Amino acid sequence: MFVALDGNAVVYNDDHAVTQIAIWTEWVIDLSAFGGFGVDLTNVNTITIGVGTKNSPEAGGTGKMYFDDIRLYR
Image 1 (cartoon, rainbow, N blue to C red):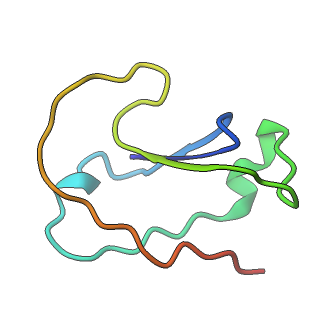
Image 2: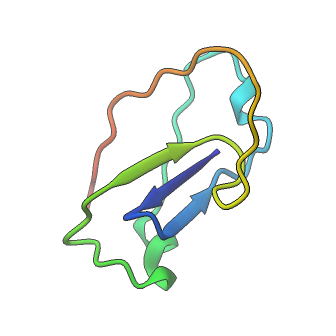
């Protein structure tokens, strides 16, 4: 599972089985994880949440995922 800011700054979840967890799970990402990508964190236009690898997508998979409370904290 990954989060991408403005399509370029990509951070992957450390748990490769995160999509198989059957309960609500919080994923906290320190903004410094996006620091090496050159994205301006004061001017983010898009947030992409994806499953798999961003640059080599594969079709398939079934199920439901719910996303809520996407927040930014200092």
